[in-house]
Image 1 (spheres, rainbow, N blue to C red):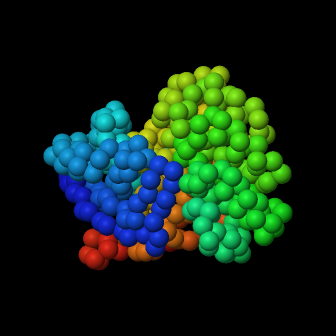
Image 2: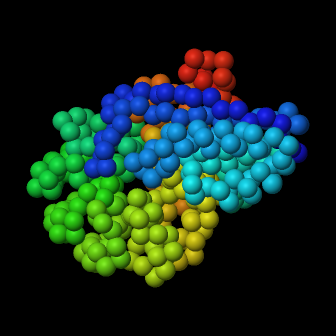
Length: 361
C-alpha cells in the first residue's frame, strides 16, 4: 500500500480559561490536522500541535516540516514513510508526531486492528485518567469536588505558581474537603531550587500525594536523589526527562517515574520505546497530552492503552477547550475507554468550520 496524498489543515481552539504553569501559559491551542491518503482509499489522521514552552519546535518550523513531507510522502509505502519520519523526529517533534500518527492509523487499519492493539497485542481496553484541575485559585475546591463526583480518584494540580508558604495551606485546606481515598498529583513545572523543593516536600507530610512532577528548575541526578530520599511517593520527570536526558534517567538513576508526551517526543513510536525501556528498569510511566485537539488526545489514549499499566494518565484535557475538532468521548468513572474499531478510532471531517470529527463506534 502506497501513499497518494498528504494534506494538512490548520485549527485554532480557544481554552475556557488560560492554562497556567510555572513555565508560562496559553489561552489558545493552535496546530494542524494531518491527513494521509493511500492508493487503497484509506485515510489516516494525526495532530500536529506545537508547544515550544513544553519542548517542541515553533509553529513556523512545524509548518515548514509538514510542507516538506507533503512533497516527499506521495508514492512511498507506509513502511518506508514510517521509517523515514521516525528517523527525523528530533528536529520537529510535533510535526513528526502528527505525520507518524496518521501513518500508524493507516497501518492499524490495514491490519484490521485498533491502533493500541497494533502497538501492543496486550493493550488495555480502558485507561485510568487524572483530573486536570489547574492551579490553586479560588475555584480550586469547587473543581476538585466536581471531579470527585465524576469519578476521578487522582487530582492533578499545578504548583510553583506562588511561594511555597502560600500554596501549602491551600493544599491542606483542599484535602480537608476531599474523601480519604482521593490522591493529589502535583506538577511544579521546574519551579524550584533544591532548597525550595525541600521545603515544599517536607510540608506535604500527611497529605495524600501520589507524585510530584518536575520539582527542580535545574534538574540533575544529585539534586533529584536528594529530594527523592525525603519522600515515599515518586518524583516524576516530564520536562526534566528532556533536560537530564533519557540515557541518564534510565541508567541507575533515582528517577522513579517518567511522563511521556508524544507531541514532545516525536510520536507514539518514540514514546512507546521509552515506556518499554522504563519498564525494563522498573520506572513507572504516565502518558499525557499537551492540551491537544481531540485527534491528539485519541493518539495519546492509544499510546497509554499500549503502555498498559495501572497508573492514571494525563489525558482528560479536552474539557479545557472551549471548542474542539470533534466531540471526543468524555471520561466516565475516571477512565477513558478506547473505541473498538481499526486504526486511531476517529475520522475528522474538514467540511465543518471547526473540523468536526465523527468517532466510529
